[in-house]
Length: 173
Image (cartoon, rainbow, N blue to C red; front, side, top):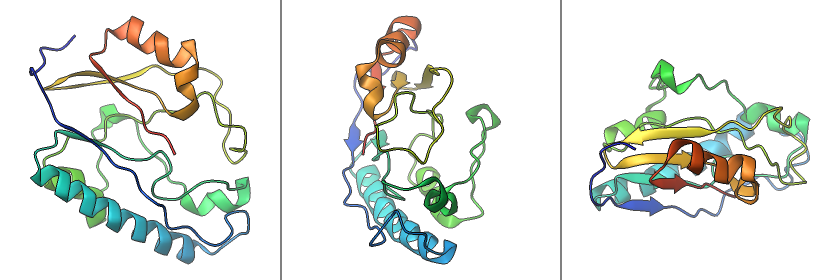
């Protein structure tokens, strides 16, 4: 494991997502982006507050920006390509995307593909393989898995055993 600080402050943020009335009915990209921006504004305020209070890391909800219960058609306006974290990419063309950097919080550690999708998540492709994801910080090595992955050896236990993580980041809806 990484030479970790003795302690760190983690913030876990719970958010009542602002949704369109019916997520199974197609809405315009403009409407989706409007709602996502409202949720991002709320999340940005929470990040600023936690950073001022000394948080080293913040964990936000799995579906905290766009919501849940979509179809493959209605989720499309919410999607974007996310490059490998080794690229050290940050979409700072949009000021909201720079919230972590401005508040001296750790970079987006890694995109974790949820392996054990919740039954109603028909909008997503089921991953072929479970991806073990870790990231290192000045305060330790973290494993990350999402929602239903906690119930699977291949996702939850394997990342702890294989990478000797100090802590777990566990976003869920």
